Length: 207
Ligand code: DC
Image (cartoon, rainbow, N blue to C red; front, side, top):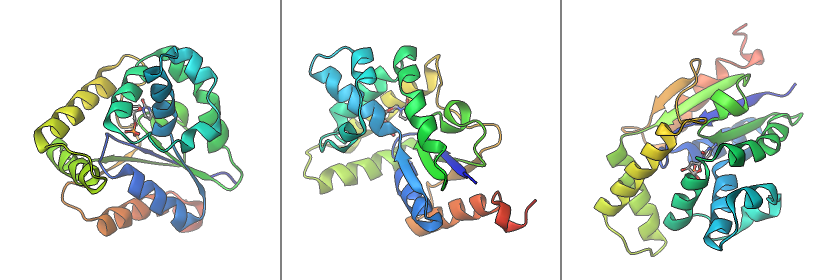
């Protein structure tokens, strides 16, 4: 039986790390749906129209090595506002979610729009300051020159755009379990996610 795990939340809350660990724990495939929007945003920086880029997207595009830059993140969040771009990316995500072995999808609207029937839904969040510090550490580790205030401004700008858009805004599904990772280390955050998901698995005896 397909068992879909939907993990949503704002940038740098720990979604990616938790999603990869959860997928490895249950032995299921993982799709970072932010990469779809990043790959589309990346092409718009080259002058391609957003919808054209979204319709032409192929799985290979998700492997491009510059998708993690702050410029591409901002471009991704801008194309993600466009309903026709979101619509063009729905089928790919739902097909992935329907894999026979089950799947973990992480993003902004997985539990609310893409997989409202997902068996387990998590909303992973943290304060903007904690998220900015984590992102700053990641960028510095990659040798990117930046400072806390500009990373925090970037996080806030993207949060506002992701939460305030009319189509599929970032928000927890009514039946999502919220995990605030502000004061949790990685191991504790992963353990909290697995405990929440175990409660929804048929084999857990929870019903
Ligand atoms: O998770 P991320 O930082 O890689 O996402 C990049 C942008 O893509 C984010 O600002 C909003 C958008 N996005 C979205 O709108 N819906 C998703 N399911 C995933 C990402």
